[in-house]
Image (tube, rainbow, N blue to C red):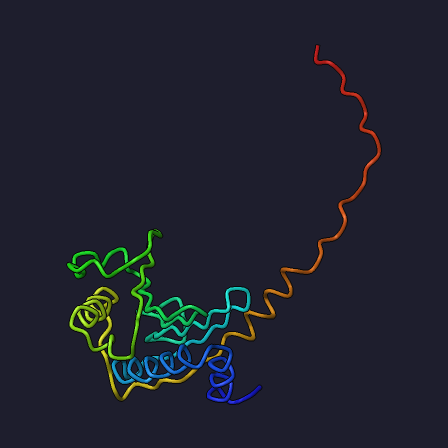
Length: 173
């Protein structure tokens, strides 16, 4: 397996240069903004989506937010976004799922916008997480495990057992 940063570079290379550049700059800003957090990386081939979850643990589902690159743009997802509506008076959060909401990021400078910073702070408070610059962090690539899972799921199922005609049932009486 390649080093995580080499793999990350290969994922970013799958996007148009402008999207890749914006994604790299936003990743750098989020790493600085969330010191000590793990970056859990997923690449979804079918959606052509690179998702980096920023989590206080080694589990992506515990992420406070996620940076997601798509062929048409970059978004910042909040796992508990539906609960952040009070912290979003400008109604930046988009989406209608039960939990996740996102903000479209047009540039790396968007992370520094006051209303997005307010959402990040609220998400940290909601997750009851404190930032610790001395905490151990790492880049964890989950994309390969996900690809293996997808290959297992896509294997054809065994043919159904063919049975002969069933016996007629006797009437209850």
